[in-house]
Image (cartoon, rainbow, N blue to C red; front, side):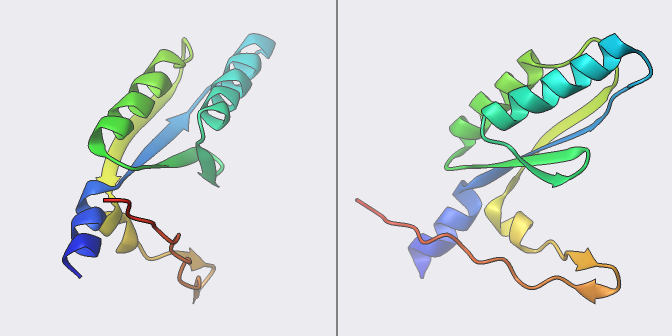
Length: 112
């Protein structure tokens, strides 16, 4: 019980929220390249302009935050933040007026 509670505060989710201009061909290309770099780094799409990534530790979250910062396009508004797995677990997700089913938690193996 103690170790699972500890992991809930140690494991992190990095969230990247963005609103990028897509009026010119270059802006669309920059936006697509930013999304591609996020996906290549292991981020998954939560909503159209929100990507998230699970990280095993704060240090790992900092690495992926830095990679997202290095991929920032010239224009647009981008927010990057990290929350603990415990905080992420408290999120309520809805599909229309219906609450989405609880996500299945990945099985964790502890070696030490």
